[in-house]
Image 1 (cartoon, rainbow, N blue to C red):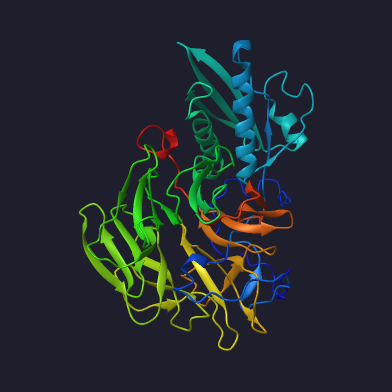
Image 2: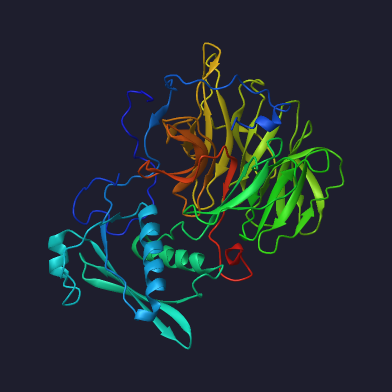
Length: 483
């Protein structure tokens, strides 16, 4: 456990939480880093199990202030007997989504008869629930619809909605229910939830230990499937802002090149930039029309995907400069550079069109340090990255950190304290972070809530890398949610 002697930091901007002080303060519910680029950045010695080392200016804490998490009661959903299977599946998905949102304490057991006479606010208030969710499945013209009532017990009001449902077993059924869950979160908090989204990552396919392929999984850990079949090395996937496309790097032609996938129909195209350099670590601009990436030995560049032109250098010089990520407005960029030494890569911020770089990670002269995998939240000014420091020439285990480039004093929040954790990527809610990591029960893909530090497993027992979380996925062929 990291020992710093500092109190938990709660001075950062909190996400809006409606009725945050409704009933007072209640407790919250409780692989090698860029190894495939070893020839580009000199990798440090392997991580060893040992006590964590404090880093000046870092405290184990929360990225957002969360004083109160309201209790939510979910009444058994109702509907015709012929829809019993649909009712059970919809309620199960929504209950788990709301739990995973970390915005509620979902009450596990409810007293019998409390809702027999309708929603009596005074009784639910005595029971301690702040919100009560009621759902009813209806059928019309052969289609199912979910009618939702979300009762605000404290302020005695109700929010209602009616949502169409695809047939049970349809490819978009689960994602359609996830979108309903996100709407419920948005009714309460003002911010959408993270459920209607997917996560890309790389791992070795079964039976071919020399290859790496891309896989995708729903944010709740369901529907894991393989995306690439290159029988080669596929790494560095990154979602486009439209949620339909993704760029990645493959060695299938011999040298690393960038390809763009259509996640809805499986189509693929090579990104032709007019140069033979090795291309790595792509990142989309928020406008979806430009791509930033590194050309090995030449620096960081941007390229216009829509017009297939206009390659321009952003960062040059003798240092290795990789892993770009744009700010939400597209005006700035973070990236990793070895300009302070091959063994101590650090995270920097620059204007999106190039310019003077500002150090963001906590470099201290003589203490070493290895920080990489930066990702800028698409909805806030928060930046996540992974790293650690050197001690007696042995690498400390990596953890996930959050920084705010606006602060400007290299202060960080550390979100993980167990195992080895890398490749963080923000969820579409700007609160949760997915990463490839290690726990006492093994390796896997995990999600941490930056408001509570609650961590859950998405995919267990896999040695994953290069995790990247999609934006919220729209319904139909315009988004990846239809697949």
